[in-house]
Length: 309
Image 1 (cartoon, rainbow, N blue to C red):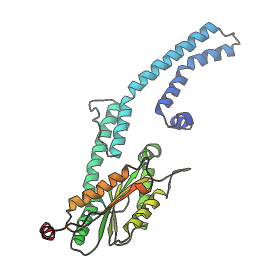
Image 2 (cartoon, one colour):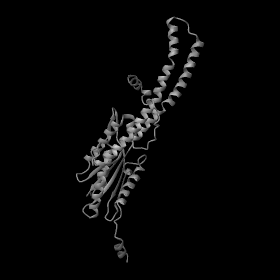
Image 3 (cartoon, one colour):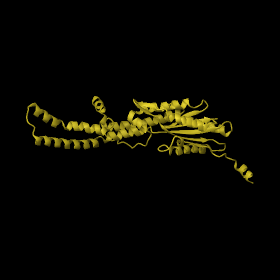
Image 4 (spheres, rainbow, N blue to C red):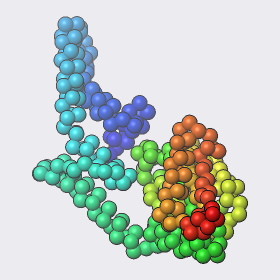
């Protein structure tokens, strides 16, 4: 580990395994040349240019051949690292070979098992609890229950209800560069911002990895409130590493519930509003990254027919 830390202290190779490997092999293949030069200097013998060039050429060829061979040899490690990253980011995972008997084979089997076991434990745990373990907000399960309850209250005319999605962008490389602990810390920071900027009557749920949902109850200034929360999230950076502050780019979609609307339709309108806001993530303004949908009131078909006569 000390040798790896020594390599990691070199800025040029710090973030690249390929460069670390190339540097180590280059140093290793040049040892014969260094030994030849050292012996010549020790015995005060004149250098022979032909032999020097021959050794240097042979070492260079050995370095290229060894580098290519090692890249092929380390492909199982690269595949294992990619599989673990996919498990952490909830992406589809390619099946790793299970028939190896050496250390690489055992590593691939163990990584595959740990990833599948973590997925299973996570799904069972999420079904068992109402609070998201990382952020302390509602889990998706609890959020769906509150969505159903508050939409029913709105249907009965007891309150006005808005449902909003907040999608976080620009965070995917933090886990790769600084470790998942720093990404988790950033998400906890964002959860704290949500808690500080919603009322007691409202609720916040972590819908999935980088997607949050808010239920706004009896809010008559929804646009002002949503844009304020959006601004707070984008302009409250967090220290992910010494000297590096990061804040997400946020796309927000909001829908107001109207009596007579089916719950699935209400949910889809909020989701579609968020997707519309996501179109402005790369090139749009902060104003364009917030979309609020207010559907037309739904009139009973029989009443509508009577009014049209």
